[in-house]
Image 1: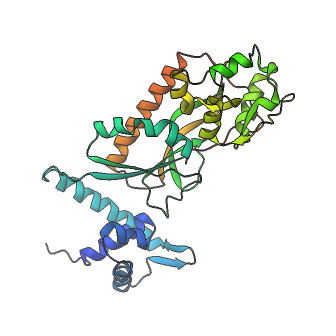
Image 2 (image 1 turned 30 degrees about the horizontal axis):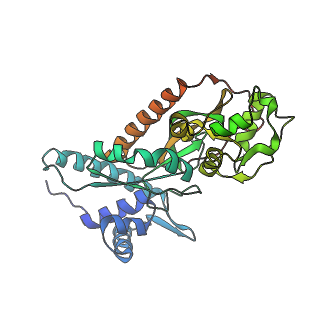
Length: 318
């Protein structure tokens, strides 16, 4: 049976543009020019006599006909790829995987473990691209993200990795100079404020002193607050995962009970994005590593459930 099909290159160009929501990203994936993608899409629109994209000031959006065609093509190309992979020779080409996260998470937890990941998975070219802002997966060349929060972000699929706890930390020498027997003993001027104010609020609420103590020390963000505490500059509130390595190495100590936060770490990807094998490998690895870190820290400290905070922590790993 002879199948009458539009040009395969045109179908590939349209499917990539629809999947990535961007002509530019489609051009990059297929190693062609933006003009070539536009030309292929236009040829299909002329052949089908219907628009497949709506051009807007913000870019392009699929029409109803375009969405229907894109879904069918993506499924078809996935089937072709799966069928052909059974006969393909093992590829020696490394698979590139771009992962974004909050700068503090990348510096304090992920970076010290990258060598472990690459030794286990030498075929994956891991690129870590940390940012202080939420990355737009629809516009930027990013495959996965690790975020801290409640899993309610627009435009992404979020899968919970591990719950997070907040803890009070300082250097051993600082604790000897400023001993504590209870949270109520804290001097507000010695408390290093977090850029994310909700972290201190959650901890102080759980400790029952939210109405009596207002931190008034210098304001620092994430990894800087932990570094300042390690350098003997005061008491900081820290995420247990991010502070874990310093705690185990005894560069910092936690003088009071850990307070469980209501936020968690999530792995996120663009909503509806096709799952990449390298991404699945990374997700399994990062989940296992985070749980191992949390379990090791739980053996060091007693975790106390947090009382409900007026404004639950929303600091995010992007």
